[in-house]
Length: 162
Image 1 (cartoon, rainbow, N blue to C red):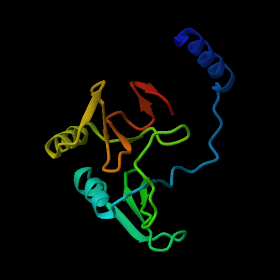
Image 2: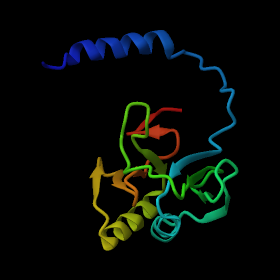
Image 3: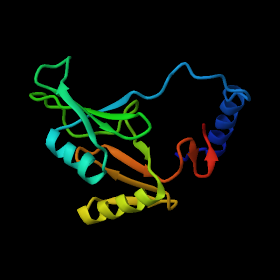
Image 4: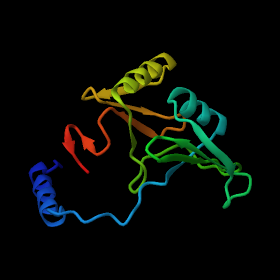
């Protein structure tokens, strides 16, 4: 069974024509407060994000919803946080990409930082893939896919998306 790419493109154009407004109203949101992922090992996650990726740990405290669980946060710039929970005693199994789940998190960094972090990933032996000379894709210790993107916030592949 083949994929009908022409039909997919026609559907995309139809959706774009109906929903992409010529004069976009302001969003009701103020911004992303935090994006929360799961961690199987708090210290390993802190070493990866703070030491390798240079995202400072900003806080760690007990999760209000699960006794013994840690909730911790990293500064990813522009007032945004990347957060994690661990759930001691729960067998959550390995990371999986599923419908409705996480595909990847793209984090903007300036080109010089992109180059430095690419070098750090290589030295650390973290498998990664470079696309378009501006994106580095790799996985964190628990398997979540990350992208470091040298494009400015609000831009993607040279186009304004915001």
